[in-house]
Length: 406
Image (cartoon, rainbow, N blue to C red; front, top):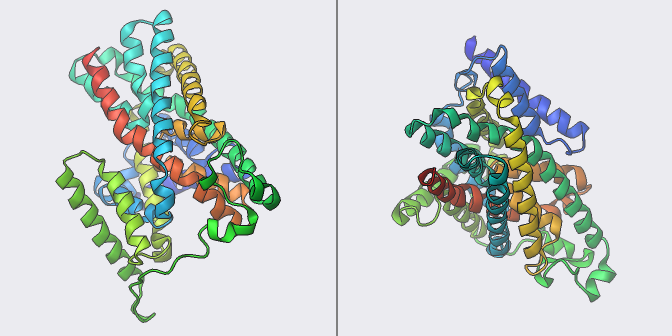
């Protein structure tokens, strides 16, 4: 009974987030609404253990995140993924701009420890927030322990909607180009490299609907079951994690999972959108999101009220630095300013929020399957790779450095 009530609460929050996102045409992303609902719930009547009670605990997440990244690989083309080094540069430039502006100008208004405790979550979202919180507690600086988590909560309120706005603008630009074959045939857009565009005349090939021939592990239909698909996903995940362990953290394990998913899909071992075909994708995604939002249970009302001014000032400074740095690299690297800023904004939240926000925007902006696939091919790889570069790699480095200079 208690487990079912917990599941109903968690799924109710997810449902309301999706409804608001649909009603607002993705200007208010579902992850933002759901995060606010969890926060209010924890402040009022929702038990702090509601998420693990609904079966979404540590054991669930240990499997889910790697498996979902394998799935993400089955949504991408290998050539598209390999070209995302530009997204990495832009995302990392955004992180540098954030640190420079938030620290350089922030120290004019606030003391050293306040700025140092608050800036890392702006460059790595939840990961950096909890690294900083744990480090501050370990150093017995408990008076500042609230700043990293408060920063994460408040910048999400700006970061999610702002990312959605940038992606909607980029979608309009891409769709305009998609439906102008005559223009595309003679010249590419000034904000895109020639190899990153596709006109309506070759759109079917560009979006990947005419797939190249490749090997495929086929079985009679009665044996090609969901269990068989999940078995194959598990095998690929084991191989990816084994390779990651051999590399001793030189390359982030989640990036390796994504690459292995792409390779397994390219050679035909895994189907397109394999977890969706197996019927478990949404369950896994909702569970991972719920687990992430469960961390909001440690945020108190008085925690936010007492530090709201410095947090908001630092967020504004950091976002301005992020926008400036990403904009400077946008044109040289073939990005529009909107796409560059959106890629940099992934530092605020990372996976799976970057995946969800992108899909919500695409579902609203794309009117046909061809248009949606075209938008996803151009935006999703940039968002995912940018998020991995910032949240999974840069945030860990920055948080560890900032803890040493407190």
